Amino acid sequence: MTALLELEGVHAGYGPTSVLHGVSLEVPEGGAVSLLGANGAGKTTTLRAITGGVHWSGDIRFGGRSLHRMSTEQIVRRGIAHVPEGRGICTELTVDENLKLGAHRRHNDAELRKDYDRVFAYFPVLKERRRLSASTLSGGEQQMLAVARALLMKPRLMLLDEPSLGLAPMVVRAIFEIIRTINRENRVAVLLVEQNARIALELSSHAYVLEVGRVAVEGESGALQGNESVRRSYLGY
Amino acid sequence: MQELFQLVVSGLAQGGIFASLALALVLIYNAMGLVNFAQGEMAMFATFIAFTLISRGVSYWIAFPVTLVLAFGGGVAIQRLVIRPVERAPVLTLVIITLGMATLINGLAGVLFGYLPRAFDSPFPPSSVGLFGVYIGYQDLGVIGMSGLVLLAVYLLLQHTTVGLTMRAAAHHPEASRLLGVSVSWMLALGWGLAAAVGAVSGIMVAPVLLLEPNMMQTTIIYAFAAAVLGGIESPLGAVVGGLMVGVTVNLAGVYLPFVGGDLQLAVALAIIVAVLVIKPNGLFGRASGRRV
Image (cartoon, each protein chain N blue to C red):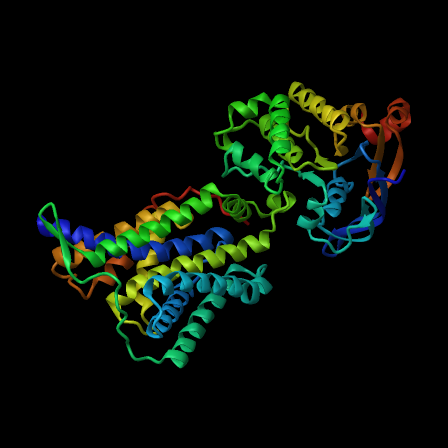
């Protein structure tokens, strides 16, 4: 089976500063993959390269087709939902309007209504606050909104950039539970960037550890969890 | 009392004209943090198009919407051809470009249509109607009604359609919008088109009052700046309220403040700009904003 997303020797950076020095990784169809590593290792830049937010060379293929020279919106419309660092919530808009933005290119109303029901079943708090400004939501609720909005895009792949950042452990657990459900039940592949390696490895089946722009270690999540030297030197727990 | 009421109504009519042009300024300011100094000249040029159509025998009520569509197209074209290549330039560069466009459009209108002021016939009868003991000109009522309709249409478009939603999102959160599949660059183009059309309404409304010539909008644009600043330059609602307030204020000041008269009305608008910037820089409806860097 070919991978849904493949990165092959990707170099990327900002102006003269290069951040990625030949990153290769794969996300299988419906799979869950973690991308771990210290601050500044290039995790966020990897995600940004995938959705065309930085200049890159090498090759990135999605569903077998190269994403080379495609604009962000073209890439996203092929079925990649990217929940960026800081969640990308439009705070001038209401919760409902944020969700509508996620769904704005969907045309099958019956199917969309089902997806709304599903999203509100996952995150009942969003239904209660539909009419409120998104700026009134707590950090955890904003993260929920970002994931819900991504789900309404009906993606084949979801890129999640540090969904646990700044959230209380209980909230993190709840959100990861939903991400797991989205991955298993809706067959949406997930590429998860995390500092919190422990919780990421519990979710994913495969993981890559980045170190200064290169893949330092990769393997089954279970194997990495069980390997004490990897855990100590790269994952910090 | 009666006189006051009549002055308020004609002030509202003027204010509707200012509001349309101010709204055009706000639409572009919202989309890219830029004050479009060519907005008035764009409106003037559109008015010449309407004038040309009407003088060729096209009915006013057909020429009006046709002009708005053409103005919309012109606005989109300006964004694609002139603004987009320099989108990432510093805002000062963009300001200079809009100033250059203003001069260019002004000169182009002079070459194409000449500098001779022309009478632009109003579609509304010159008579007036008695309401509650005051006489209100059909001209004023018509202008109030037309600007009201246009402003309502823009409101509905922005607040209650998917395109409007994506335009607002693209304006405030371009990066996040791109990740949701919004084509931010085309949303900007739509913003320019919409602004050009809304601005054109003000030109067509004001032409019967001022006589049509290439410099026609050069005072109206000042009133529109005052309206936009008063309302809070980021707020479409503020532009409308600001426009009406400036219209009424200027009209009342012209009559009740003897030293203002007809000659210093523009100075009242400038005084409003200065006063707002000193006392409440975010305007009536503006959010206190952190600066985007």
